Length: 85
Image (cartoon, rainbow, N blue to C red):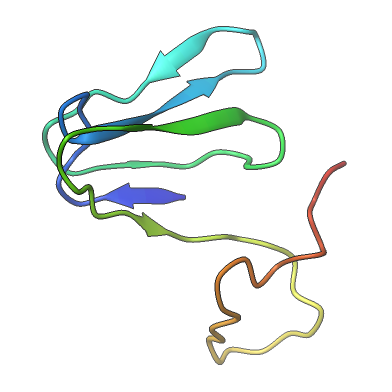
């Protein structure tokens, strides 16, 4: 899940996606926006802009153990357990 609190536009920087049906989409929203997608199944890439674009990324992955305590696993903390299938 990407949360873009200042929006995503060509000037600010955005992200394009290729959907499973082959259709391409580029986020163009000046207000706050979020997007939820399957990272390993949806082709996507950032498109840089002239300004900095704050982005919050939340990765939802299967847990090896059940707990109610949040854990920060670090950048790419889910590696090497990519959900490729």
